[in-house]
Image: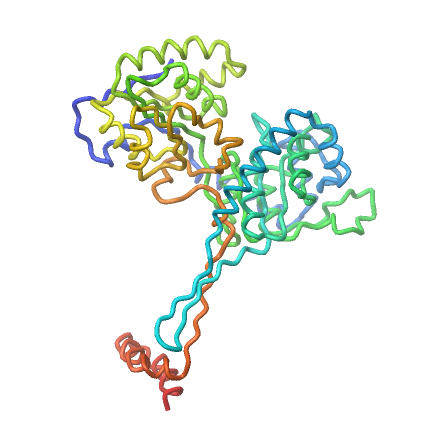
Length: 446
């Protein structure tokens, strides 16, 4: 089912490791060409284009693209008690963590009468995308909304594909999550069209059968778009990047597990399967120095996969080129391997898991020990599950309060402080052949 890559006895550089390790292949560039006309259509025709795209791609033509307020309340009223309780616990934990993430403003006294202050200012308006494909993701509502709210964002819009099974509305559990968080601006729009709507704004969103006199007929442009999606959503975010900020170009989800001979094979197999459940392109990678563990995990996979609900999806993901069991000489070598891989999710199942975790430089999130599975982080750990994929953890971070903040510097010098540094500024300006810069200083020194 799952392939084996044997790296034992080989001394490989980081670059060589990255070439040998498995990874899903997606071509966002090819998708950009297909998505561009959809973006342009929304820019020119607004709600009419969004309705046409919803009918074509989601199989439903929604008259009123903004979800009515009463539909949000109804979804929460009808939510199962255990699901509501689970969401409430997750919300509590997420708020605790994200409230602590906000950085403090600071003032640096450069000299007497000279200060540089750094202020953290939230963006004005954010658009949050919630997928609606192979699974239902109220957790994505929580992760995106709570990070933005904790940053102090005042205006939030959530969008998720219309569902034919729910009368052209997004899935009711998604609507219920929005209501729990106090989000009232929700759209039944998905795919590239949703990204275009958020980036450029759109009109004519109200039901044509009504007078459309209220503010529900228009979606105002946002400043930042976040939230995972398929390759078409990713391509759309690439197109609008620069007009708005984006969180990242999300690729297929992935897990890497570093495990020694003492790891529980039942836990390891279950976690590989849980990630494969997301998508046929999901990556599940085990790195171990124990051939016995590898064998036992294979046996566990054969057993557990047959009992899982999404059997075909899981089998496709585990047998794909993006998944493998990687054999290494020792755990020190394994640590280098997973660090080179830069996984979205990294689990460490070793005797010295906490110490190993401190050695990792490249991962979206690190889950330490046998009782910290990725599933916990997906929902209720308090951490954010919107994380860098495809090795981008080498240079980017997961979603958090920082994703919605801008650092603004405030510079204030007195006349005396400017005089003390003025000649140095003039000298540098002259060296750069920008004498007018120096003249601006001279005008004040005279």
